[in-house]
Structure formats: structure tokens, C-alpha cells
Length: 422
Image (cartoon, rainbow, N blue to C red; front, side, top):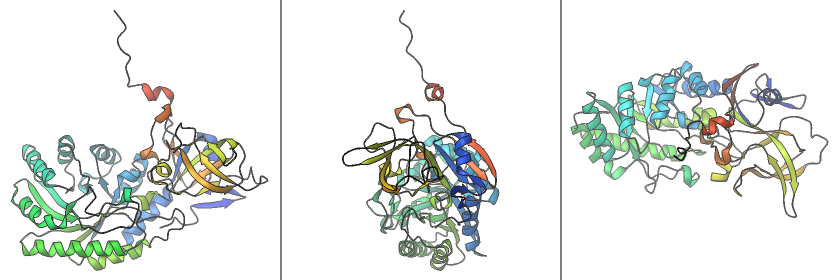
């Protein structure tokens, strides 16, 4: 999954997003900063929606990938539903104008308070992941005078062939209910007075670049659906989860249309198909802008020390993830192309953004770390007392500040000193 070339382009050697030079963003908002393309977000979401044609479906954006209110608002205006994994994400969706009826509440550890909030909002469906969670929701729904709509997330024991930290469909993972236990759990759910079964859910992992695991998982899910039908338990929808990958380096993720075709073939009418894409909608739509503070050479390495760090993009440190790095301007065009490790100022050896990159750089060069729209700001931290950067949404030729940069006082505004000695 890639963003069309007209979102990012070179003009007189400078890197632009839509109709805005990224150097102009840095000049106005300083660095580091996150920059998102509204056109890219809308384009990918519409591709998902249109790929289904007349087939009954729902596209729920996975809020965990990027929960900025402007991103959620952009998608809500298109009619998107939302996949959430916390009460905080539910609050964000509502604040952004999303419809609670189009919300799917996933996640293995929903608290009692989160369940109450979701019931009060009258969300679309809870995806349940254990027997204990099911019993708790039944109790809380009864106390709230409501009947909760549910699906059970099943674990098909399919290897998604992705990084082990983002694989969720194997029996060894914490997610979902084993297929061997699913029928009994559905029978129990059918007997509980405050639950209403409407679906089956499955999600096998993230950053998938092969359609075979999707097809295998859906085949196993549909076998369960037939067992449920034989047991007198009818469902309305099959939630296939998300997980379609994007191109970071040399990956060749399937086209959205091919992915949807696999789902439509595997899940027959009359079942509605629900999907939960996140990374594939927002990942390639965003960049992290950073400046080179220092160039430093040691006997074995050449470092570009940047003002962005693992606090702004933890994926390289956490997963050894690869992000393309591009020079934004032409200021260093006359410099020799050398191999650099791009690192940040955080006091950890794991603080790196990219390793072994051939770049023309000098101190104060502006760089763009590409495909940083997913799992960038949402995983950012204040480690080393670093204020989190601003977020900017580019809409044609307009730059919108959609989250201001934190200042130093923000970091400790809610903290308290001990009382003075009496």
C-alpha cells in the first residue's frame, strides 16, 4: 500500500507534501514535528470503501495507529467507523464527531469503567476476548439496564509472518479465544441475559504483506460460523480485523482491491464484512521532520545527531523498523554522499532513527523521516523531559496546526511538590 506520487513530490529539488513545501512547515512550526496529508488519508479510506462495491461492509479505522482529533475528524466526515482499544480512544472518537454506533471496542483488558462508558455511549459492538471479560460485561450491562452487542474475537492460530511483537493470531499470543473453545463460549454468551450476539471477530496481526494468512484465517472463521449456525446461533457480521501493510522499504503489500476481493470471496453473503485498517490509512500519509544538530565521526561510525529521537519515533528502537529518510532541501547538495547513522539526543544506545544511510548532509540540514503517520505521535513520550512535538495537517496549500508543541511547563503542570517543612 503506497500513497500516490502527487502527495509527495520534488519541486526545484525541494520535497513537498500536497501544495506545501516541507521546509515551509519547518520554518513556521520548527522541528521536530509531525506532518500529515489530508488528501492521503481521504484517498486511502475511499479506496477501501469503494473496493467493496455493492457488498455490505463497514470500514472501522483503528484509532491506535494515530488518534489525533483532526485525523479522526477527517475520517468521520467520510462516514468511517472506528476501532478502539481503550476508553480514552472512545472519548477521542466522540470529541472528533465520530458516531458511537459505528464503534468497535477491541482489546484484551477492558476495565469495568471503560465498559460502563462504552455502554453509556451505546457503541456498536464489543469484541470480547475471554470468558472472564464476557461475564463481566454481562454483569455491568445488567447493572446499567442495557443489553450489550457482542462478537467474540477468535484466534485462528494462523502465522501472519510478521514481526513477533505485532503478530496476534497464534495460540501463543494473548489475543482472542482459541478456536477449540469458541463454540462453547458462544453457547455461554447466548445464555446470558444481557448480551446480544451479532458477530465473529478475528485479527491476526499488523504489517501483513501476503494475502494467504488472511484467506486461511477467514476459512477457519467461516467454519466456526457454520458450527454456530448449526447450534442455532445466528450472526450478522464477520469482523476480519485489519493488518494490511504499507511499503517502508522493499515490502510489496497487496493492493487494497485484492485484499478486499479475498475477504469477499471467503465471507459469503448475507454476512456483513467489517474491517479495521489503521496503519495502511495513516502510515504513509505522515512524515516526521527533523534537523541535524551535529555531524560526529568516530573511528568506526559516522553519526548525524538529530533533534528527533526515539521519543518521537520509537519504532526503530522497539522493532528495528526501517523508515526511509529523505533530505528535504538542497542545502547539502554539494556535500559528499556519506553513510550515516541517524540518532537522537536521548541518553540510550537504542536511540536511533536510521542506520547505514547514504545521505548528503551538513549541520542544520532538514530531513523527513517517511511513513511516520502511524505509531509515531501516539507512541511518543516525554522521556528525558522532552516536550512532544506539534502535529500539522496539510490540506492543499494550507497548513493547520492540529496539536501545538508542548512547552516545558506542560511536562510538570500536574505534579506537586511535597509540603514545606513545618
